[in-house]
Length: 483
Image (cartoon, rainbow, N blue to C red; front, side, top):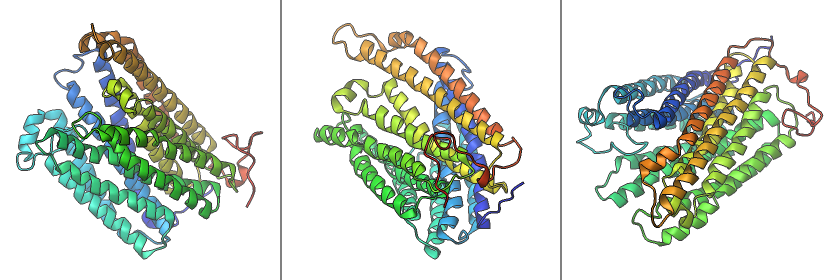
């Protein structure tokens, strides 16, 4: 067996973060399937897990496990990029247990207490922050998130300052600090509904379509540097261009949420124009990933990680870019906003841009954390199959939701006379909702296959045994040039 050791021992703290992320990911998917079933079996699990509670748990688990993944990825990547040990491994370990306990207690609170009672017991009357989608966390949880985020950023920033500075770590820090800063708007809850929604989008939109894209670019660039051997200067130039477009379009693209909430009409122009440009950085990311794989100077033994990385760029473009564009223009959004088309875009965007990103980092880092250069060929084959099964499952879900959204708009929103009521429309969408459940089950099977790949043994793949196909490599690229 080929033994691999970590270059910096403090990188090992990332392992617990990755494990926690995957466990919470499984919980999110299970609650997602539960929600899908509740669309067609309205009293399923009622009154024990009503729809609103299942939805809170589903969305909150998504946020929490992605944050665990980002933190684990940073703890693994930054010491290697900075060429120095983590500033405080002990602090990273303490923060893990604090964050995990806070997240677990919050979920237990959602499941065991009426939401109004939970708000009363956690001091929401002192500073009213609860009750808004994605930001349902009680006040103590929100304060805990801020404390954990600031301590995490202190640890990462001090590590970067004492070591080598690279474009990748600088962009990552920008994204992580932006994540923490924009979360502070979750504490702003004005009584004026227009201002409330505006500040709410400062968190939700500027996270996922702003600073998280910087984290995406930095982590994807890191994996491609390690797996392709392409000169860092080339990747750095691509990274700078991508994040410039991401920030420009993402910040002003917030306007597509301001169309119809009471803000000035000029936001319909600003939101439409810059939202229409938001697919550009994701398309550039796709070109970037394929270009780096084509230009690779070596065949990395961890070909599964390469597949996840390229899959991130492609599915991110489709979900965040293409599916976002189809209903982002103001005249179209007038009919589609809040429909199942929005749900289709949200599911595919999160899966492509961020779920696959975290899995990419885990796929790349976990073999080394377990003392291997790469997993065995059987394990990697299972990983690759899990990618395709999960992607097919997500595609079925998204196409079903897209079809449901189109029919919903046609029956309920477009007719000027005789428009169908909401519940009558929902009855007409049952076929699509059942199809969505089938896609969720397929996705769960792919997720279980991915988890199973961690327990498949065998001799790890060696760098000198990786073979290229007739097209060159697992992705059909040209044969690698040996360094």
